[in-house]
Length: 105
Image 1 (cartoon, one colour):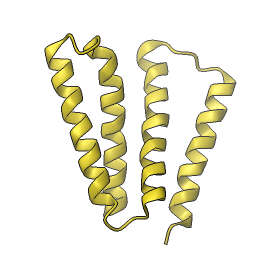
Image 2 (cartoon, one colour):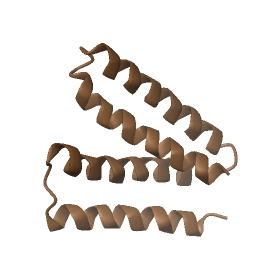
Image 3 (spheres, rainbow, N blue to C red):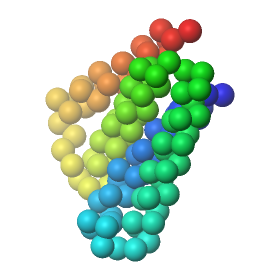
Image 4 (tube, rainbow, N blue to C red):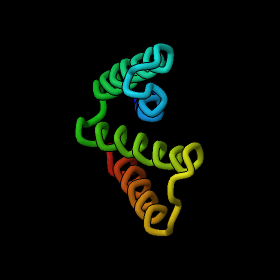
């Protein structure tokens, strides 16, 4: 269950990272409110997941899910570069997430 919460926390991290783009420096009300809510939910879910998961693993997976997801959404939503170097780097981060999951008792 805690792995599911951790994954959800990573999804909310993606949401707030992408949301930051839409807040335009926190000058737009509703994107700013949504981003703030996503930030809070992300950290709360991370904290709950850390009750039973190792801190290093939980934090690294949270950041990794957020980073990979945000980079992919940046490519899809904002037309950011999808060159081979970026994609291979994202694959390495994903491999690290899977490795940490498999190596954690």
